[in-house]
Amino acid sequence: MNSKEAVGIKAAAYVEDGMTVGLGTGSTVYYFILELGRRVKEEGLQLVGVSTSDATTTLAEQLGIPVKTIDEVEKIDLTIDGADEISADFCGIKGGGAALLREKIVAMQSDRIIWIVDSSKMVEKLGKFPLPVEVIPYGYSHLLRLFREKGYEPHLRNVEGDPILTDNGNYIIDLALGRIDDPRALADELDHITGVVEHGLFNNLVDLVLVGDGDDVLVVEAD
Image (tube, rainbow, N blue to C red; front, side, top):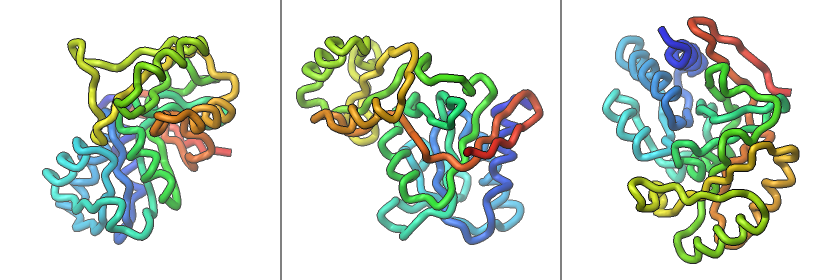
């Protein structure tokens, strides 16, 4: 069993009967959803899933997990999602899978949030992983120029030369910052740039982090 599988299975144990559960996106969350599907099938677990991406919706439905949209539920009891980096003060970078906007919308409506990662994602300071910024296509080139002028080393995420489209029909600009000393100040700056839909800084949101290291899972309470 690899660390992603171990932490995904551990995370599924936090889901209780009758919960409305936010279903994250990514390679680690994949194992969580597989285990959740097993519990639904073999244990008769009753839940409603709220998906953060089209890919997650497809997987959940294939496994027999009922899925509703964020607009069909009043609140979410628990969201379990991955992260690309988590700093020592529990700020995070998400969006490597281009689902950051829906992930943040779901997170903001959740009573409790658990992130599941392998040990390589735990860092002292954020920034080695490029920071995703979701932008509307109209005027994206001007945002690229602005980010270059700020020294943020922007790169338009693409596949074979064509910009990738998020599930919301937007583009992703990745910022190769190297090190983010003040993620809260940077989040505030990005929040006020016209054309930016959302960014991948998830600050002061997580309650618990499950860290996989081989077959072992470390449970870390956020401050």
